[in-house]
Image (cartoon, rainbow, N blue to C red; front, side, top):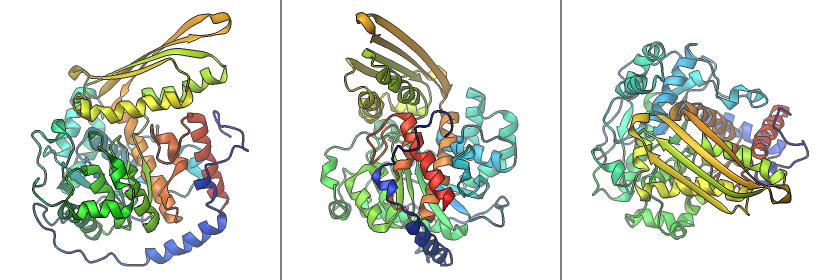
Length: 461
């Protein structure tokens, strides 16, 4: 095992362990059959959506690789922009793969699609172009640097033409202000149909072999009474009856999974966490994963807290204070939008240290920091003979540069799961998230072990 792994006899969650070798073989045969099928014919889109066709040449793709469509919800945001810049810079040899878990053994032993095979598109409500967004990040944050940006500028312009106007249903006031989104009066079913048509138009126009939808949009307010949508029937009835409480992330997830496209929820938003979406994913045999990517302070917590538990040290208080200055920080100034984020960050610690005396997390918007975020944590703990001690750490990093390689990793890994017919949620990907769907374990080493074991088993196949 690589450093930080657990003993080889530690079992995977049942949902992963049941994926036996014979099932993987059958699924691979099934995928080869599917791969020979042609893309469906797409009906013309309605409302504000316009038919999309590529007006620029596509970057050269490997002749032996599938074309993997990566549809980003929030395609002009910081994380999406950095993901596209990074992918294209890697594809042209201008950037290293540092930060990508899939480029390190044992995960790199899996047969994964190359990043150069990714073809990007997406939805957004921000009219600012991708090139302008990348330039702003370069000027304010120094990431990407000017040379890297210059090398991918044409690629960004090409992707920008594939970005469609999205919906902002129940995304919160901070997100919908000064945005260009679908008519609020459109019926929910109409919005879902238009999202679906965008996915399929993109697939057809760009000869996509497989499409993955990734939600990297700003955090929505928490959904009130999510239990109302615990079944597929209840969710579809809500869509058909124009239930205006359903948030945008759920509509994007439903449209993707219903059409057979894997879905990744990189955000704390509801998305694929609803029981009805999860049931649909099982029915369709579609993999999905989320939620709330673990990139900074919470990553440190999930690695550090098990140390206190393992040494039987009593944590009296753990205080965390986060400051950041990008659009996500601004959106999280709204208490309703911040609630889900704070919940997922706090739950990690309480899961590992259930007897923690005091656990609080703050997130504050500091405009001058731009995409850089700083987290300061103060840990007050008790040791032998009631001796009280403290530990402090400061985490400072570029928010988008930490997140972008994980987006690329997750696309590669969920494509692998789809190829082998591994529908439903993906417990072996828990290490990427603060609130991993279907998993209660938050110890980072334990979560990594599941991923390593998955890689080892599939490498044997």
